[in-house]
Image (tube, rainbow, N blue to C red; front, side):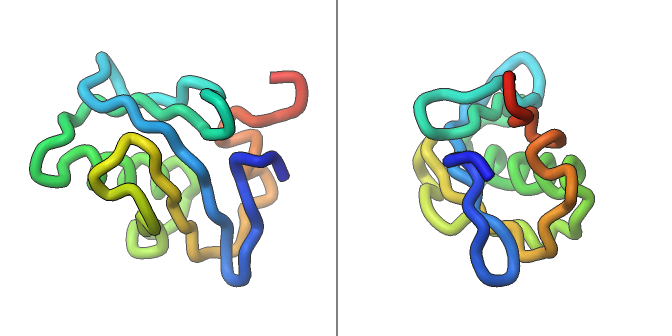
Length: 100
């Protein structure tokens, strides 16, 4: 797994860099040692955090209850825990395949 994704007991941790108020919600590649995600939602009243959880749950095909923000609730730099078996194509779904 890449430095962006770390395997832990019961799931994985993702290091993310968030850009709220983007023109659309999407993965935007690697920024430093984190996966950059653009979110349409504004960073107001937890809207961006909720949009991030919803986006990752749909992308990785896991229930939203399995996606939690471990650190960075009020920051653009976040660590997110996915409490589910690691999907075989996790890195492909996140756009982290070798050579990308």
